[in-house]
Length: 152
Picture 1 (cartoon, helix red, strand yellow):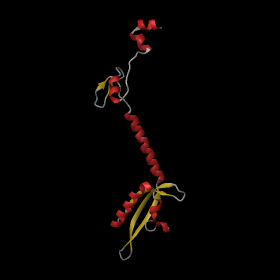
Picture 2 (tube, helix red, strand yellow):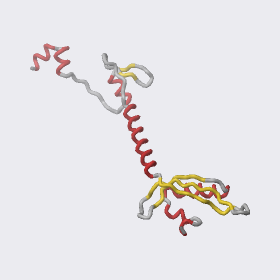
Picture 3 (cartoon, helix red, strand yellow):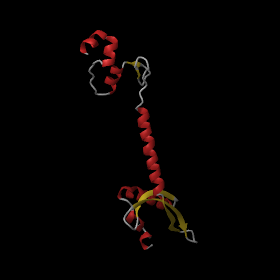
Picture 4 (cartoon, one colour):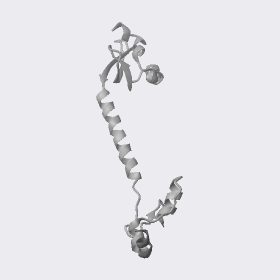
């Protein structure tokens, strides 16, 4: 408890959260306002846990500001769940952005502006791939049967 008096509470704050936390606290302290913040705080075993910290100004009977009465709640599981959900949503969005509208008949591709383009044109505009053309055995038999017979 002695460590929590004054600015002792800052000793366990994660270095990446330290400046932001101190600013919130000092700004609130100077205005004697309620504050709320989340940050990582080192637990007794050296692990950082996410904390929701809320402080409410405390006044003496004569009205003088005497500091804060506060509470801290471990919200690590909520923060981790939100992080996992955000990652999943971003992954789903990445997959959805990867869907390319393609005509089932001519295999044309619709671009961002709604224009239909040949597959080769679309790929050239949207990637660094270089294309070469060939003909598969099925198309060779269909379109050039005499050539297919000679190569058999």
